Image 1 (cartoon, rainbow, N blue to C red):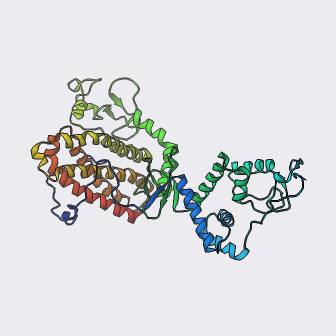
Image 2 (image 1 turned 90 degrees about the vertical axis):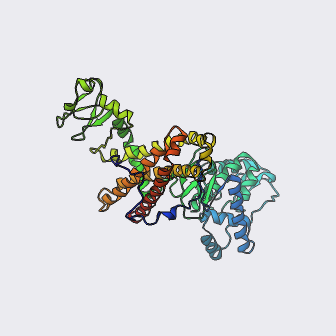
Image 3 (image 1 turned 120 degrees about the vertical axis):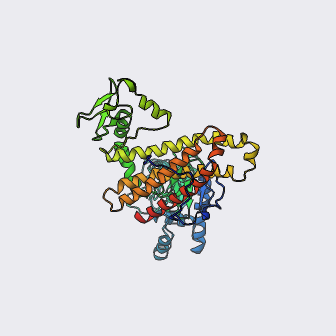
Length: 468
């Protein structure tokens, strides 16, 4: 991030670089809880609703094929992984697969699995040739269903006759095991249908049906994820870049976090240095540069007047002014991008925690002259939501930047990124206050920078779509 930027609170785009900013004045109110106001073309279903959808699809195709037997359509859907076109093609070419099985037996026989004698009422077959007892059928089906097998054949190794859903229900009845079979059916339907996806939250059983182009899914459980890859929603980074980035984070992030927590870079050669004891006077073993551990200024500018070896008055003054000692991690390219990736995430989390207190100020501490302002509360709320959105965009812009190591437009991308960062940081600083009167004092500058930052955010997103 570029923090060495001077801001003019009366900046009004005199050169017209961003066009007419009036087009951004009529912006709908956005709630502080960051709810999505735009209508998205997706629906959330529970298990029972998905079962109903499956039954309706089978029933509708059954009618299309001339009232074809329900179980026959069921079998064809399982066989062709819920591809309707292939089901119709198979049926027109090969006809039915499920035999009309015999259910009435007149005499006892021997089970071909356990070799016990079985009475007529306990005999079951699906092909009218191979007869087994109910106990063996249950054991066989239990093993198959536990393994997730849905396209099950007769127990005879050479027999290719298929087992119908009705036959399974007849063997087990309405018991708990039937639920496991239905769960495999449901999973098959969802995983093979490109419009459906499970919520990746392990504690959530809800399913999303997405008929639009927007990959951001806000599940009822509170989880927000990408419909295409089931990772956390990562706009503007595409799934391919995000998957590579997450793999890199899983393998290298622990080392990166350790370096960030325990080391600082030499101001001259950028080599990471660990301080485990001693005073603040540091000497880099690589380039021999001497500097202060706290403020990272040259040690030649330090002495008894600045606090001696164990205290740095310059650093104390920096903290009072809200200044930070930036770490660039130029020796580690991944660490450079990763530190900023988690930095924006942390800044977003901090603001989300502050929203309650800001909302309380707006609801309970506004004075009479503040309440007379129609735009004051709306401007603050819109600015907060924009900052949250910018933090998300900036966070996921760093995986994109990491993937552009040799890209000819990397410098241009970083220029757009820095522009959005500096305006987002400044807008954040105007919002991050403790008293309502400071918000009121900043209201004009907040309004001005809200419009500017919104434009920079749109530009970055538009240009990223052209780059990747």
